[in-house]
Image (cartoon, rainbow, N blue to C red):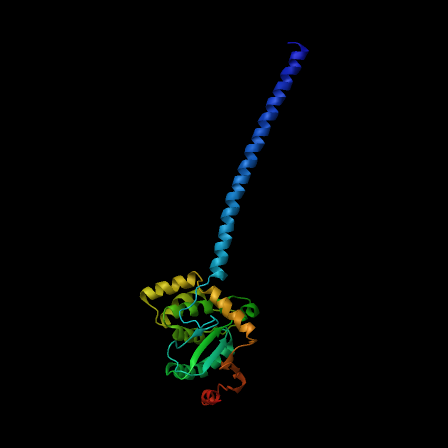
Length: 249
């Protein structure tokens, strides 16, 4: 073979190798792009789903008040013109527990008699202070218990079992199982309650009650309002007549 023929054969071989390399790069890039599309598409869905389950669900308890800032404890029982008592609370707040155990039964009795409309507005600021999410999870569980028809009972169970060690918080086992049993949630209602809790279906509602409490100017818990007036400083949890005094104006 002449030198010219060899050079032409070499150039042809080089062109063939270059073309093969080019095609290989195209295939590789296409595979990477497809892989990224699948990965990012799936990842985006997972991120959205995770965010949705944790903080953006927008189910509302059946007995939420008109602006979804709280839950009415005695729906449909308040007499015409009965004062509206609003309690701002955080389920990890020790003073909330103290006041609730002393005054809660008195307010609840008046609510059940139709003498007041009683509302609980849940706040979650202690999640930041205590570096956990227990206030939010307890609030979600309480909202889910409203759908099960035992909101007042479940509310009391939460406070009765408030952790004594700072920052420990409530466990999922307590909130979804133990407290549910103590509040009397059984059968199909228990299944629905646990599904509500596991899906964090009321998380958006609880986030909203906390934000609306802040917009209402509430900066601490417990805070008590009667017909829009802050009466917290007038309440003495050690005085058995304090509820009647406050309601009498």
